[in-house]
Each structure stands twice: as structure tokens, then as C-alpha cells.
Figure 1 (cartoon, rainbow, N blue to C red):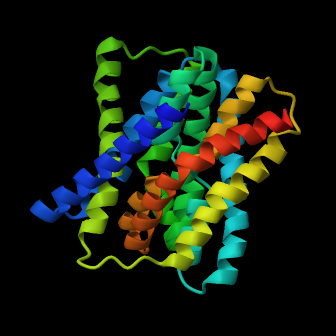
Figure 2 (tube, rainbow, N blue to C red):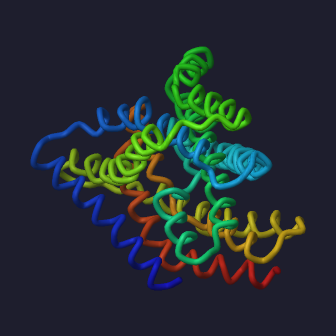
Length: 301
């Protein structure tokens, strides 16, 4: 696992660096890329992920569990964030506290270590996390700048919700899209992963002098890399699951902060530079925190 993690983190960092270079050279606005990810690319990714998911509809229990757990963690983070900040940083902290880099970071590790049955578990968990990010998480982040009515309107305008509902309907009806359509839609997954990490570097490139918000960074990294794995391990220990499934779920909980924290922070203009620098630091910390988290769940098994 160690070498896989180092390679994965190195590749993620290289994409962020590439985004920084592109942002510096061509003055690309990361907010435009973030809007493209939120309104165009993400809906296609969630749609084809559900349609092509390598399991039956019963596996959606993992998606529901991931959605509820992410929302619960976000609620706890919101309460803590309100004690630490009296502005929209509390909302950003809350959103970040409920999600992780399950798609760009954890899935390749799962693919290299586990059989197809447990890869399916990981994919359905990722679907639940993504749905959290673009519904509850998006609402919480927007709440830092907009009224309740405006937040609801923004969430309901997100096409990812309707993409997920459409895909679920087709999945239940066992409708096949055909290989040509599936191949076309799968192209969006690559764009999602690459642009999702590059937008971090693009965001950082906008600032001639990077000012790290150490309070936000330490609080977010502590929550994501310490509190979440411990709480997650205690919760998972209450259920009867085989050791391999527990390992996959723990890996999903132990991921660094999500790249989509930067995407949505850009799209809503909620401290995007703070989000970008913190996500970069969190990705580096994951080199140490992920193996420790896996050992924790082994100890509790």
C-alpha cells in the first residue's frame, strides 16, 4: 500500500502544479473551470458511474450510508466551525468536514488492492459522497453568503441531482445505453479527475503572495485526518462486516480533503485560496494518516 500511496499523491500534486503553471501562463480563471465541473462534467460522471456500477441495486445501501454519514459529519463540523469563526469560513469548514478525496485518491488504491466485489463497494460509497457534495454540502457552503431561499434555488439548479435520479431510474429498469454511449460518457471521468486537481493549482496561481490561514488549515486537517478516522472506526465497529469491506470503508474515511472543496469554493466564491492551500497540505498529510487509519481498523476488527 505504501508505494501506491506515494505514487498516487505524487501524481495528484503534479496535476495541481500543472494547474498552477497553466494559471500563471494563460491567466485561466479557476471559477470558470469550477462552473464547468459543477454544471457539465460532474452530472455526466455521476450518471455513467451509476449506470455502469458493477453491482445490483442492493449496493445502493452503501451510497445511502455514505450520504448520511457525510451529512452527519458536516453537521458536527458546522457546530465546531461556528465556535471558531463568525463568517463563511465556518460553512467552508463544515462542507470540507463531511467529504474526502474518495474519487481521485482512494479509488485507485482500492483498485490495486481489492477484488471486484469490494471495488463495487467503493464505487457506491463514492456515489453517496458525491451526492452529499452537490446537495447538502453545496447548500451548507452557499449558506455562508446567501439566504435559505437562494441556497435552495442554487441546489435545485444543480443538474447532478437530476442526472442521479435519471440514472437510478434507468438502473432499476435495467436499461442499457449501449457501448458507444457509455464510452462517450466515460470520457468525462478523465476530465473530472484532471480538471478537479488542476483547479487547485489554478486557484493558487491567482495570488502573488500565498497567505495560508493556519487556523483553518490546522482545524480542517485535524478534523479530516484525526477526528473522522476515529469516529468512523468506532461507528463501523458497531456493524457486522467482513474485514475487507471494513478496510475499504476505512480507506474512504481516511482520504485527504476533497478536491471538490476547492471547486465549490471557487464556484461560490467562498475563500477559494484558503481551500486550495489546505487541500494541498491535507493531500501530503495523507501519506502518513491513511496507513495509520488502516491499522486502526485492523486493531478494532
